[in-house]
Length: 245
Image (tube, rainbow, N blue to C red; front, side):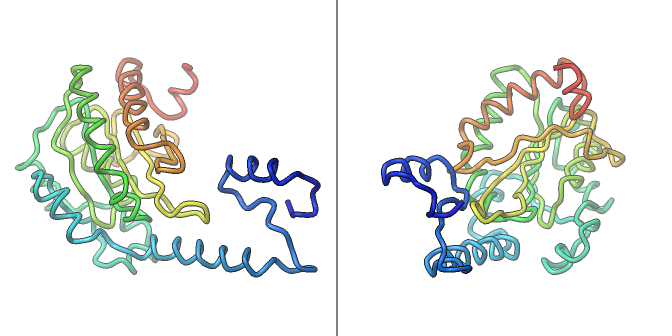
């Protein structure tokens, strides 16, 4: 939509306040305005940075090490490899799983996994507020959960492997999503009942757009807990859960 559309300044301001989408951007002939183009370049750069960045050492120390959360890697050795060969980010080596079994309790209702995914910034920005809401909410509902595990170079399926190894009924994988041009810090929660290495995408229920301009972390945490309770009661997630709704 361009600025040729007839709208009062107040209507324009109200419209723009309701969405981060690129609307009413205007044009100069057949080209975008300079301000529009520069804003696009800034947002594109932020998205690229989010994909390429890694979890900050200070965050790992304060979030994982201080709290005693295991910090592990998938079979990937570098960020470049993670981006270029997506399937490798889904695999957790047997040695790593064996180490987790010695540190984490098995047989819990829920296993929480925090993965950097395609936006480590999303994890750094939201996990600190989101995780306590989920953990406390699970306790209030008498749902047992294991020690959260932080995964470097992790994709969604890595959480399924970890939860399967720890004999958990359900996994919550909090993961940085592929950045868009309106947000480079969006986190998602992939929730899977009966997680296993053979899990496919349709088995998962997703809560997305967790960030300050989308669903705030605290609000998302409360919703995730309600959703987990429903999934455990109905013993299905993903498409099968939608069929029962």
